[in-house]
Image (cartoon, rainbow, N blue to C red; front, side, top):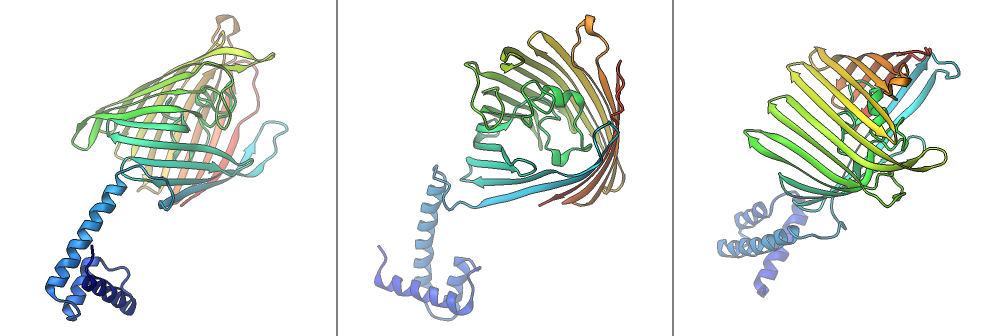
Length: 376
């Protein structure tokens, strides 16, 4: 219990703070100031320090326990992508559009709990991420809510970090994106996941793992069947800047006419390597939707040609929507080329040309895209 004298000392402390406008100074500095001005004695100062230490310890104990989010600081980040798109395909005029406009709210409760909510306002606003994370150690983190399905390197890479503005055909078709049978879910779903990193050597880990169960119906919607889907991904780091991984997905979904439940399986392999200013990445993905097997792959090379301000990118990717031997000839491929201008760490301009060819029925569907990105 504080003595009357300590109450007087605390009042004096507040008066000094008010008088000198020192709200940014530490408690220790303020106590030293009081001593130097002979407002309090050294013994009084020691009493204040002891009381402050007890209060600090109590506050620290509160922070280590789970508490509601009320009053917690929230970090707001986001990015805007505006682009000009010129498509050669008939009936698709040149267009200026807002490709993505995202706000990403992140809150830290304590050293174990944090949360995230990301909203995309381009077109019809919708929630992309809404997740609560619990981190026990580096080797165990548990996430619950709506977030990336742990499948594929490209799928789990944010569009704000993509070296080419268009995703590979096989990724768009087999990772819950634009051409997937379950519709465009931005590569996300609602579920629970455990992940972590193990085998630390110096400043890197040898292995990252992700394993989770999901509804399998997509974002912002309840499950549409009784089954739950499973997905897992493992990434090895045998050498610095070398990553090798594999992904697996097993579940069910409803689609078709009439709508009914079908099996939906995926498996994939990935490789990425960075050396100095150049990097390579590639993936192979195989999918099974009902009785239809699909597969595809891509290989991508990027290199900076002027410091880290100008980057060249090239990618070849191919996708076969039905690998049945009796239905050969329906595959398509892309040859993508681009140059990225990084003005600083929060803005860039991407200029891409995509040459698209089909195995049998040729479609004049090449495109040119110029996309400006502003991050904050």
